[in-house]
Length: 166
Image 1: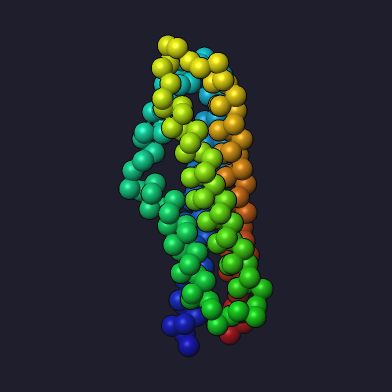
Image 2: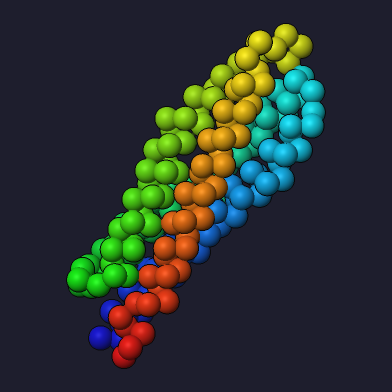
């Protein structure tokens, strides 16, 4: 019984940790980097944004980015016996938010914008560069809210988990 409780709570804690790291990543980008990038000229924006896109592609980022989906499934599987409890449904909601609002949304919205931005010649920007920057910033802000909500839902599920009563 105790091992099961450790697995249930441990998987929830891991899901909260991973989604919390990603929420912090998106939060920092939205409320620091994006604001700073609004202050630079187009050539600087195109160069720096491309560098960010290239340098974020590393094993640690991918581990946490895709790990958010994996630990969501782990938490769901580990807590399957609790399917009639609010925490179980919070796990489903948090996982669906993360997978849909971070992984799928990034693939459908942010990555195409990244590809477009990386195709620019910084000395000859397209006329829509500001609109593209703004669209990317809005999409990232949405990922910030989505990842933060997923993180909060995991924390609530952990705090009210039925095993806390044993």
